[in-house]
Image (cartoon, rainbow, N blue to C red; front, top):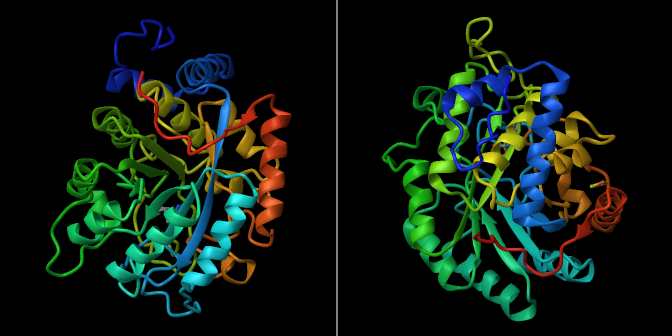
Length: 355
Ligand code: 5AD
Ligand code: FES
């Protein structure tokens, strides 16, 4: 098969994307990995940016059918970090020379608008870190206040562009109709760098719908694209087999190989984006999943800074990588892996470049 990106000015068609998603030939796939790596080098360089992840609360009002911290899971102990605990993580991010801190939580209204505004101001006053928020579908006024306080980026995955599948795995809250796409557009208007992404291999997800996801990344011109395999959690409806798979030959597998394909294709369709080699991918291959992601299009990693006592409680899926490691261990581990590949650790905030 002719590599679909041979003519580099022409965007990949949906059919070409599907052909890559079903490709099994290792030589052909080798050419995809090489292409993605070249485009990554040309557009975002050899630096790998470290974004320190702090999982600030595992409370959530949502009932996502795939997620282990959904409000329906009554078996887990809930926590919310204090501002002082979070600032301690911020100081660690600075000490470990990270350029960004990512504050992530379930959709937790115990995290109030003012509370987080004060925290963002504090981080921006006491450090030069970029601040990324990943706090779910918050009202406009919250998003505006946090941007005003200095937050730089926001992550909100749309999970799948198949509206019917999305509705099945992500029931809406009563009285709330705004879609994730509307929120993503609003975030861009507010001046955030915007990140989104999908899970790979959700039961019912077809190759066609995953190709649509990739086309959507390109159309939205996302600043950041995070993708990872769907990992079944036994305490969730989806993990208990609550949704049928797509017909044979159409269901996307939630495999390591499929994740590399999507990382590589994401790089080709949106060459300037910042793309992490995700923890979900590392969970499927602890030995060298991170490196293979970085070698096939990714240019970011997100070392975990959450205090060890909380990490195991932020179990969105089981057996998450780095559950026991302390913050400094993840930092050393990841810098070692990056340098071991002949890449460099990025300096500064590492925002989206435009070429
Ligand atoms: N498997 C893989 N990824 C998951 N996420 C949530 N639950 C799971 C799961 N069971 C991902 C979603 C969410 C991100 C924070 O984590 O894509 O947006
Ligand atoms: Fe956590 Fe390697 S990234 S131990």
